[in-house]
Amino acid sequence: MQAQKYSVNQHHISTFLAFVKDGQIAIPEVQRPFVWDASKVRDLLDSLYKGYPIGYVITWQNPNVRLKDGKLSEGKKILIDGQQRITALNAAVLGNYVVNKEYDRVRIKIAFNPKTEVFEVQNPAILKDKAWIYDISEVMNSGSIIQVVRQYLDLNIDADSTLIEQNISNLLSIQHKQIGTIDLAHDLDIETVTEIFIRINSQGVVLSQADFAMSKIASNEKLEGPNLRKAIDYFCHLAVAPQFFEHIRDHDKDFAATDYFKAMTWLKDEKDDLFDPSYTDMLRVSFTSAFARGKMSDLVSLLSGRNFETREFEERIAAETFEKMKQSALRFMHEDYFKKFVMIIRSAGFISPDLIRSKNALDFAYIIYLKLREEKMPQAEIARLVSRWFVFSVITSRYGGSPESTFDYDIRQMANRPFKDYLESVEQAELSDSFWNFGLTQRLDTSAGSSPVFHVYQASQVKGQDKGFLSRDITVADIILYKGDIHHIFPKSYLKNNNKSKGEYNQIANYVLMQQEINIAIGAKSPDVYFSELKEQCEGGNMKYGGIETMDELLSNLRTHCIPESIFSLDINGYDNFLEERRQLMSNKIRNYYNSL
Image (cartoon, rainbow, N blue to C red; front, side, top):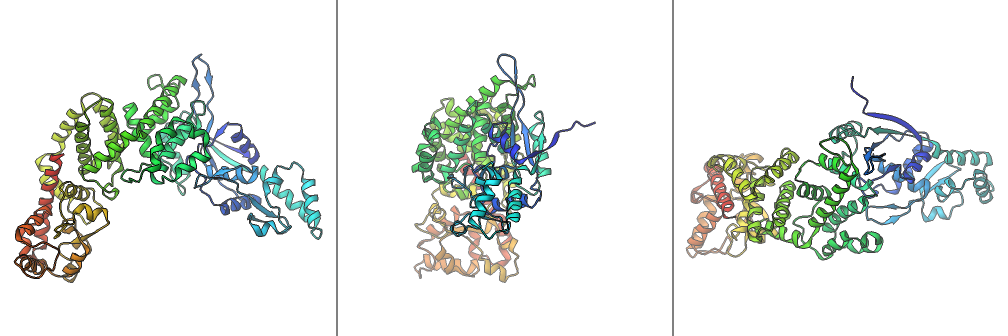
């Protein structure tokens, strides 16, 4: 018989809020700032007033941890689902401040009209109308319904005293409405908790294992978890919005005094957006680089103090885990480390975030960078190995399927031998001639302009300082950075006029980065037509397409764009063969680029 994995309980709202206030239940801000607008808080209060259910909240008890003296310390419960509802009640019923989406501490004031039994968000019009109780939290915390009713009737002498007393009594009874809790057992593993959460909350936001890790971090005040959680959250927010720096400095003075804040101060002037990590990225890199493990579930267990050998939970292990995560987070945020890593990726040709589709590949590349940096390897060698691994992982989709398992496998393999040796071994296993001649060309047979291998091809053009298609001076890098367009060698309208489908004309092998004015000039012409005109241009004729003036320049431009010279005579009948030939040339270019790293 399967053991029960949870218990279901009912608590008065006032009791549940008291649990939160005294720390029996931690709200770890899994979803971080309070994202509801005030109207949703109003609707929640209205539902409770009318006796409607507001759904269950889910808690997960931290395991009991063995202390140094051998005694057991009972773990507190973590609220893993229901944060927005409980925070809303905290704000509206108790009158507490909340941190909103802009990270400002604000009050949410809900008004109530005892005559009409209507709730509304407090506004200037309501403050001028005596028929409203301006802020229900003042009533909830008054302690005397008689005094509240008397004060209201003094201001509204024409009101029905019996009706008003009844409706204010109903308002106060909201605190005594029940809220259901699903309490998950402390000994459940993270995969089971995730599965339970998904099944119960299929209509809501699905939490990742990184969310659970953040909840574990934030709930441990003894080990300064809230500051570590803020460090991760604030760094990722600052990377996107540097102007947020002043807000942290002015509104969270305790955090502003920490080493974490000092470590991220450089972001206030940072404009580079090549790597804007999410909290999942930062957690994954910090954990994997510090613990040589790749599964977030292991981090959740270690934060709880799990001893993987005895299967018990120990205070010592939790303390060591928090300290290692703190130091690793500081390494992640280190200005010199972060900027030099980004410089490595940029120097490999990935000059725009639009070229980086796989954050997992970027994360593991940063893990390698931090590991090699710690081993005091020369910077030039680090740059070579990191850029090579990053491109390798992208062209092979190494972290596409089960990224955590692959992270775990790779980091454990790297622990047993020099990284250079490990890289060479996986290259020999996966980058055979067959891969370059067949595997990669098959991956280039797609209409998806967001394909990672097409991004690598573009990076190879940037690295090679290639000029745009039919351009004399404008580089591929310029076109990418200034949001130039991807155009078709066989014009799209030409192919559509010849009954080609969208999947046929939107092929990677038919794409080039080209100046828009050149593309407009080409229009719907067949390649054999506009290339004949290009030949005339190179023989002293009118300048119709770009600034190329000689055949040598034109042929060189075609080679850099992997376009076969047969293009001069091709019409619709040669389109399919053209695609096959160009895919092989593109694969060859990517191979040469990879070998140059």
